[in-house]
Image: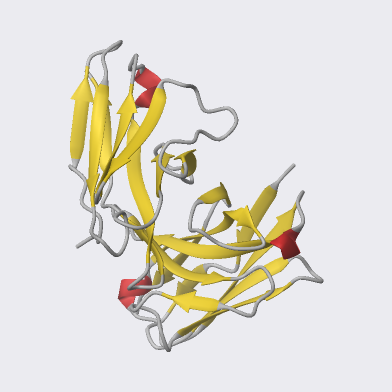
Length: 110
Length: 122
């Protein structure tokens, strides 16, 4: 049981927009910034969004993050076949004194 | 280039110990907190431990507290994870990951190693 809650799957046809939600609590998302990671099969995770809505260098602007209260979301615009991957949200948790992750959302391009 | 390389994984029996290493290169290792994150087969990511840039602060997940110990040698640009009393639940790929905030920590991990596999089995 993950501390942060994500839907297990999301999908859309090429070119469409997909939104992944992430729900937490006052000890994590409610008071800390949210990060998003993408993990392609058989590879290490990669930071996609940090500090709620900031993109590291090299991440295309098709990826955007937002946060409101104790929830956050990741939007993927102009969906492409290479976006098929697992996506994880994460935030520091003040009660647990460490980062916590969501269970992951597998994105499928139809 | 900025890189983290894990080593030390293997197949061990329940109740035994193992030490993982993570060698850093391409950045000022002593300026960044580093975490260990693991992923059991077919499962999601689980944070294991974090050590501050200077080694003075250490944080652990409840699942490993008292059994795992994180440490670093800034003179060797190397991070360690000493694991003891291993159980089958510890079977996973173990990643080391750099915190994106220099001289502090905020939990976003911007550089990841390729992972090392630990299998606990009798």
